[in-house]
Length: 246
Ligand code: NAP
Image 1 (cartoon, rainbow, N blue to C red):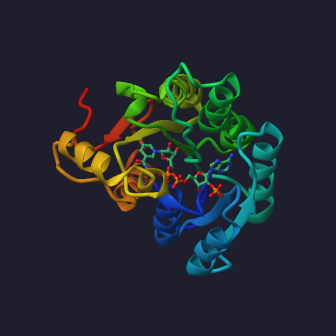
Image 2 (image 1 turned 135 degrees about the vertical axis):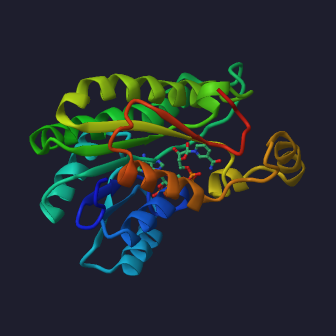
């Protein structure tokens, strides 16, 4: 069993939504936490205040940019000495049928959701290899497994994360670094609140457990992989109320 206490966690997109819940959960567990944000400076600083300035820092970086993602890892190491836990959570949607979707909108979604995972892992790789330990958790989506109308870009990026997770797990196992993906179902965050009420009801009716998930439920899954997942690698953990079953 790994000890969270005193370890260093980087969580991308941690000012809001699932990333925020994950950062707070790992912080409560005793980790030093890097709260990455792209635009949500105020909310990210709130997370830091909540965890205490000795235990957390907010770092701005657009992780869809390779240079900024590398800068995030570099600044994290400067601040806390190393990175033990990397949670690739940052994500966006631009939902349109393929007929209307532009190549730029395709690229933006793939760049932010998928390429960012490669950029941060690549930047943190040397440290993980030297330490001979580490936990990498990539936030995918059930949409990457099941597909979804109007989300070809997002589904492709999230499915890509699952492949990236498995291949990375194979490469990094020899260094005792575990790499896993979590596939949330519909979760109560800003990303989901854009959905109109009548569509919400239809979505709920499709979920076997009959409700939207709360961010804390993803945060607990991350904590499980960090604390109790020493023999778990290359896996996809579905936390989705049963909306997709493998
Ligand atoms: P959200 O409430 O819309 O928050 C998105 C987060 O991603 C924000 O913190 C945002 O930071 C960050 N972000 C976006 N682009 C970024 C970039 N280029 N660089 C750094 N950070 C960036 O979304 P959420 O629901 O919490 O989603 C979190 C993750 O879970 C995403 O990967 C999403 O695809 C996945 N997911 C969500 C659901 C759901 O139902 N909510 C379901 C399945 C999977 P700023 O605010 O600072 O811009």
